[in-house]
Length: 348
Picture 1 (cartoon, helix red, strand yellow):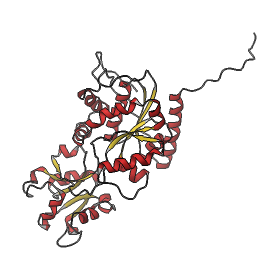
Picture 2: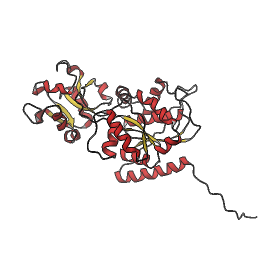
Picture 3: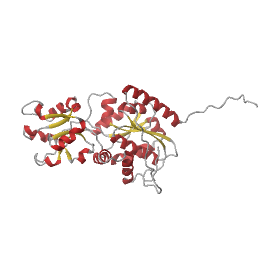
Picture 4: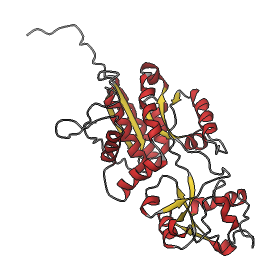
């Protein structure tokens, strides 16, 4: 038996395999640092038929990532479905625990796209001390700052997942038809009662500066006395507000419990809360290779409103549906994809 003296041709891993290995390394470091266990990526998504999103490539690799809370899982699955409809072989790296690991995946080029919030990038990743209440200004600032980091922000969605003040709907008329935060100051002091979580109560951009911004000094007899403010766990704020433990509760503007409990958000008419619009963020080298991706996500962004996400978050958090199914139904309803002719399956 003869043996060849020609050395074997080395096997070079594909781009997708190299990225997966790199992503695993980043996630391992991040998880060791946080002490968290990586949850299953839940890479299930229903198979989609063609829609208004047209094929721009034929099986090129694309890695989508997201954080691991409900809204991010829904947005992540929307991105996966969009990528598949555009002809990519999508690696589903959604459900990553923590904001920073997601950011690191994108910066390292181990992920190609995620949906991120302008305020989160500006205040958390870029380390700025104050955000912009004006949504256009906040987007422009973060877009410019991240260009030097090798990231490109696509068009932002109307979705603005920021803090908000809500009131139970049945109490609106009893409180003089209130519709803005500013009008709280017109109420008798005893009606200026708040339910807030501990973090918001102590944040430098939270309860105290919000009251000052709206002309109500905390602790002052003619402002908001300390006894008027009750501290709750995050989830309990919603039910406490709904049950009348207070007139006004601190909420997140796209939380599904707002609709489930029939709460009404008051307009931040004097512009206190920073903007947290969701937008697709691309690894710039990927976008340079496939510039059509910006248009794909640009067609989806305008449909992602606060109301749309509240409905989808409610379907997952209250009604128990899977984020992938909720994302799929939304994409079909908007015409971006279609129901396949055959039985539904799954992809990754």
